[in-house]
Image (cartoon, rainbow, N blue to C red; front, side):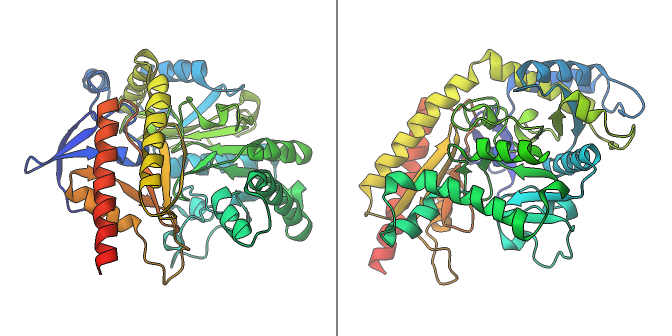
Length: 427
């Protein structure tokens, strides 16, 4: 994205090698949830690295991992009480699919349109958020079927423009349509009794920061229960407080019990650590030694994760996420109202996982605004990322972000957008 050479970071800011400071609204793509170099996380890493760096988990236990299991058990939703640790989000998704196939003795998997689950052969087969991720990479893993995700905003655009439905009715109809298409997939493409798992992001990440609308996750749970399918919640980007609850699937409006929960990114404040959580009776169906990895559950990464959870709980970051999320959404909607009608077509999200979509059709001839605004924000000292095949910016500040820092971000974004639009009108 840039040619910046980052020298150091603290809280919501990074500094380059030449001393320039940037407000970081990328958070390492949703990783540094406790801010850059939180003192408690740094201290935990420094202490652990002097004791044990690598304790291979197929050989022996180590205390940071045992403590992490206890800490995760205390925060996991529903009855998820058993864990397997790995290094990256993609590896954790692979572990989830392996568990599902072992537990059900079934071969096939359903993923959802616009989802992102990684870039290994297996996870790339599940990823449909952008063509570029899989271009030139096939053939991919067989046995994957893709069903529509209820992207309410785009569905609304198509229907309301045609005068087909009232806007207030769109969400329920969009959800119903997606669930109907899932049932149609069973009738046309694959027997549900051959499906091991459905994998879904409660809030799509690379697909555009699109929250699953009310009723969709619960609908998936019902379908899974009816056919003996395992429901896998990919919370790699939405987990560990990002949406204002520890995990997005806990939200009352979204809530649906997953059989397997995939986590990574925000768990260890920047150290590579990922994993899956499930029920012991499912985990016990796997042959001993079938899951594993040389660096799985690294001791220093586990120490960082324990400190991260301590900060999230001890410093009230869930409450701050909700408050700053409301502040951010209110500010973005004020900017939306200020600029030409239809320029910003949607402001959406949960907590501090916020997407802002410009009015474009995603076609080859469409000139996106988002990348221009992102580049202008960089010139003004702020990092912000694009996402999706639609023209979307995503705001991912650390959960420690302050009220003043949110106002700073809004001011920079508004100024950058005003300049970009002014230049377009003058051209």
